[in-house]
Length: 110
Length: 111
Image 1 (spheres, chains in turn green, cyan):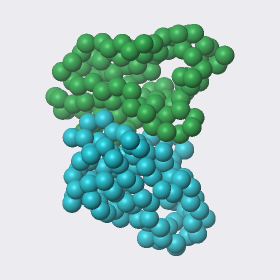
Image 2 (cartoon, helix red, strand yellow):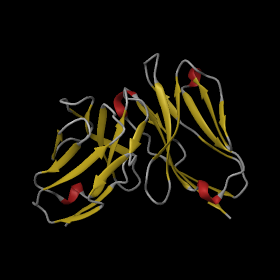
Image 3 (cartoon, chains in turn purple, cyan):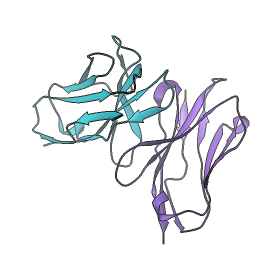
């Protein structure tokens, strides 16, 4: 069975702290895509990044970085120097089967 | 480009009433999806359409029907609404089932 686990239900940090959100995707598939989405308090869902299982190169976009390790099926997301605007629920989702994790609610406090 | 649009934004129904949620995308995407999101939950797939003329059940299809009217439009119908269908409904589209782009959501309350 395919399963996405985001073990951290809620995280609370103070502004400027670094924070890492964990995602583990259990699957027997050898090839797959994983995605991260952001849902701010306003409710819309915003696509952040896509990775495929062949590419373990870390990716950095501004304050955001992603670390994908196929050996552990983990696709972790780090926000450096967090800001209040980063407060949102973050979802990890694979492409196959269109299943979603339960999300991690991040609160960044001033 | 408007992206993905949904109507209505809010709706209150009484148990047993019917309604159709409308979704349209202008990105020329082949695939479209309907999800529901309940408090503290991720998204659960109701139905999807991989291409015009095809629809498939997702994780929670009971109580819903869909129509892929053309490449742009994908509607979701509740024939006899129940309180358990109170939720926020999201429509999404994607090309080749890669990343999805979402509409703003419809907040539905069934009393």
